Amino acid sequence: MNNQPISNDTACVLTAGEPLQFPLPLTAMPMKSWVHEVLEPDQLSTSRKPYGRRPLGLPTLLLLWALRVYVLLMIVIVVLVIHNALLAGS
Amino acid sequence: MSTNEAQAPFALEAAAPNVNVEDVKRAHDRRHVQRKRAGRRSWSLLWLLIGPGILVMLGENDGPSMISYATTGATYGIGFFLPFIALTFIMAYIVQEMTVRLGAATKRGHAELIYERFGPFWGFFAMSDLVVGNLLTLVTEFIAIRAGLGFFGVGPVVAVLGALLVNIAVVLTRRYWTWERIVLCLAAFNLLFVPVAILAHPVSSEVLRSFFTWGPLPGGVTGGFFLLIMSNIGATVTPWMLFFQQSAVVDKGMTTADIRHGRIDTALGATLAAVAAIATVIATTPLFLHHVDASSLQGADFATALIPYVGNIGATLFALGLFQAGLVASLTISLSSAYAFGEVTGTARSLNSSLRQGWPFYAVLVAAAAISAFLVLIPHAPLVFITLIVNVIAVLAMPPAIIFLILLVNDREIMGRHANKALGNFLGIGVTVLLVLAGLGFALITVFPRLLPS
Image (cartoon, rainbow over all chains, first blue to last red; front, side, top):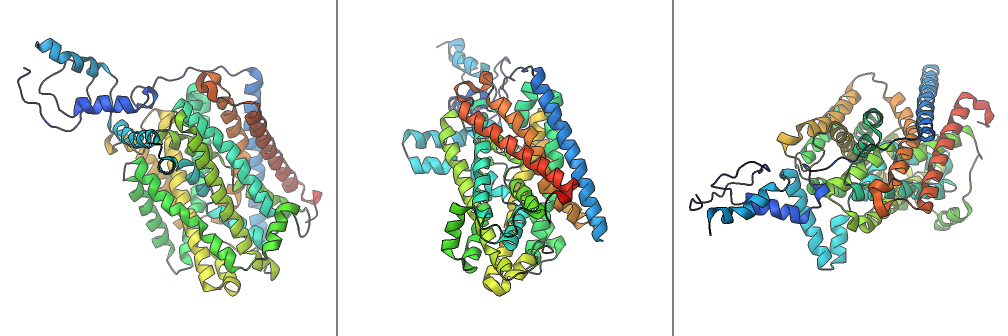
């Protein structure tokens, strides 16, 4: 098996755990190890481990909701006033 | 050597996490950075690492912002607003620097972090806020593009569709580095307002004095003054900037080793943008000095009105600057929508993605720009209405966005030693309080207009 010529196909993704099959694309292995050398583990698009949930305390939740209500209220006021101003202008 | 011994290193290699096209492209970019760092080539390293900060600041000098600065200059001349604008960019730096640290330390975009740390409810809420706000803002960018090119006799359909094609073409490079460099070149033209300011022949001593005295302020504190304050703040500090810069830092592959350069990049961007903004105020000062009524001027009307004072060359540069402002902002704002969508839905979120893997990302990016572009072309669309509310809504929507930012940047579990210190929190919370007060003040003036003299 290891006497078969190695192809020069372009890089492919090797799935961890699957049995290796020859001939192996020559660029696949060097490409993968080189990328792992250069990038930090969290920079790899396929292996990012999500951060866990951080519980929001009651004061923070109240603040977030208060700001949410403030924004919605303000937007309604702005939209109404500008709409009325444009109607009055026309 | 037996077959098993020959295969052993390959087996270990195969067990390592997968890489794809996006990772390979990012690794190429990082290898350049690492080589320059190892070779102690400081200017080359800076050149490689600048980008997100400059783009976010110059991108925020968008169409409506430049019109806001032009209106300021035409209404108040050289005085209070010059140092005030500089202050707003200091505020912008304080906020944006935190996004650099967040992105570099966590390797996550802003929407993704909100989603992961605070849950899907707040994650989708943040993304929806952003996408809706961005859609409205993008409409105003295409209005600016239409107005700027309209000065040269280019029809609205050609102007808008041409800009849309530029958006699509730049994105189809499928390479973050290429996209960034192209947009940086375009963003540099934001400084076109500087020669216009010089052609307006300002009195240098007046310009300098205004930074020390914060005056004069013709007419004093009125409702109109407050509106311009809100408008200028909205022109500098908006939610899309948080999402864009953090995600761009991640897409660029920056790490904690690059935080110092990220800060330099952001400071450089704030400085350039402040220079362009102040130049725009100075450029339209002749309209104030000659008592030209600027209240009805929109878009390229400013360029036309300036011809007697800055000449045809100055007016041409002004119109070009307006077009550029809209174009660059359309590129950065649509990208921020796509980043947020990809991060919250768990799909591709990088300009390095292949078309096959990243098609939802690219689809959202193009759709955001296309929908806004087509809205501008609809006859009798309420464009004036949208233009008036966009900057104000951006100011109003900023406090919740900054609160999330402050919560995340203080999260030691994800930030480690890069979490905010006391000074950072003092400044960040200070900016938030200022924005909330400005919004409340605007609401009071709007609902009770007789509170202040008109």
